[in-house]
Length: 243
Image (tube, rainbow, N blue to C red; front, side):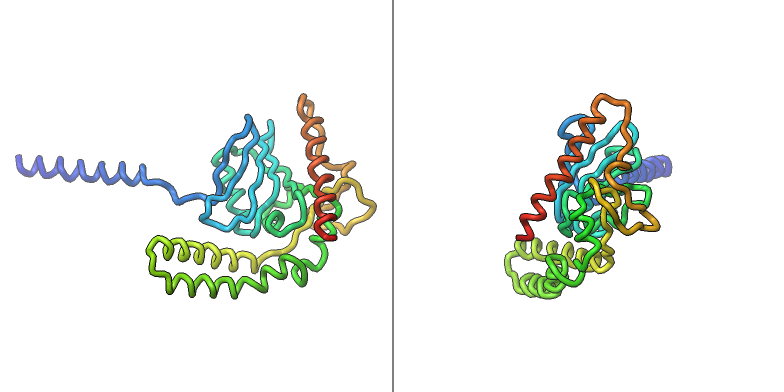
């Protein structure tokens, strides 16, 4: 009888352990997806990774559109991986609202079959010398000092809660600094009208006249018009930011 009771106890403990393991929460994701209306989501960073910017996700009948690819290849990969929690449809379009690094540094991790849509000015900037001068170059130059400052502040902080926050920020920024070293500026290959562009072997350039195919759905023309407004209005923002 004692052996039977012992066997039952061991079995119960094993089952409990298995249940606990199955119910353990997954590692925290880099993004939270909030549905605004059916098929349209906002993607916000959770703080576990430096993603740099928010984005939008549009789940269409057959595929997915993502607006902005975030601040690093790492955050772009996270977006593509975590997107599967809301849709298993393929990503077909990526929209760059403008050229700033926190919206475009993830471009390179999107598969070649994904069309990247952006304004001609965005394409020109991303094919220029942004690694040598400008905002992104300044960010790269400042990162080592920022990390040293965080290390110093974390090492001398006496308040446990504040120390934990600083150490968390240091981990996130250290991972970010590692990821941005692999950035290869990747410009849009679909722009709203242009006379000439270099051709990419992996993602051929196309003008607006050969961009997104129209679908026989009531909202297709509305969505295309909306995307045109998005990339066109970004030009004004970008030009003003350069003055």
